[in-house]
Image (cartoon, rainbow over all chains, first blue to last red; front, side, top):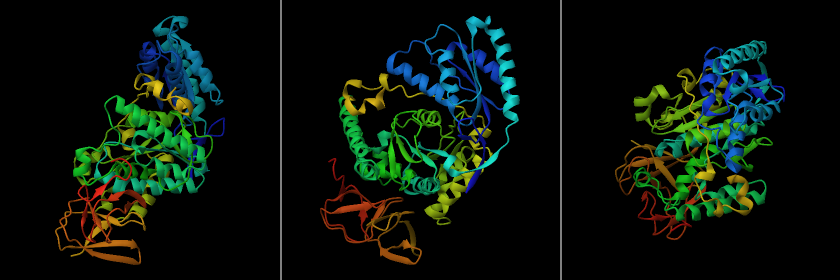
Length: 397
Length: 93
């Protein structure tokens, strides 16, 4: 099984050929947007960050913004800074340039103001565009593909049909030498012992159990018990936290787990990887895109509009009511498993086929409507870091 | 008419019904393309809830996705609705 893509300087393969315009700070957003408006097939990563970060928070912002620039779907990147921020355009450009892809940066304060920066930026990005347009697509094996596995707006159908079907597709990608990323650690609670048994490295299994137990203890101090399941889940037919979480992790299929990535960390080798991030859809997808995922499946029950600027997102819903009311937002109707028209296995093969078609260039619904939602998980301001010490520190800085 | 279910793993002792089932209704468990089991519901089972496909003794594991989702808190009969009244989390209650 093969897909068509653009080979990048470092050997990775993009399924889109974007020029990324990345403001290093919120203050340069306007200039970045104006440049992107003039460049065909460009994406502008507009965000509210870049100023006043320190320590772990600074590293996270730098890792994620530069990670998006490093994503193989980006042919070349232009970073626009103001000049006095601490997430500098220069630092981001240097991180992106490590991939070998064409990268430039401009600071508004040094370029002579906003209008001159826009003019100069359009000039640089136009040249990047012209060069990127010379690249031709070639055929590659699935060993070059990194698939993100998201779910959100879930309901009873997600865990029973849609996630297991995505799991079939994920297992097929992994069996073909490719990579999948299973995020949302909050939704592993209750299934950590089963996930730990699937870890190739027993140390990772121990770390996983430690992570979930520590998180549960810390969350309880804040008045939230992650092992409780909501009354709506119980009405929907879910009885225990184990059952609910198994439904969530079913989208990771049955493949062995190669290890645990921190938020935005690139998988060092193929296979199925876990990623520590909290389960907020947009933050989660951005983490996987920053880690180099070229494509993502997004399982939903109640429906979701969101997509991602850099990474095409294939949305699937298993609830016939959602298909009837929000069908315009959904790429694949998994409710035909409920009616018996398809099985989990046969629908999983359809998902795999859709992954290949989207990789080959077919636009997703979210791409068609121009969805570019963006958010970064800023752990240090969400949780008490004191409780996340020792071996777990790497996930929380 | 026999009603369809979702059966996720060969080790499972429960299946998920795909419509509201009344007591006395027959449901079909497709264990493999060649092995179909028929179970008669002995209680009402709401849409997308679980039905026991074999007797599950009190204190033993209820299995779905091929994995333990909890412990039977009473003897569960084949065809019975499996939910909060007869199933609890194994580790967390």
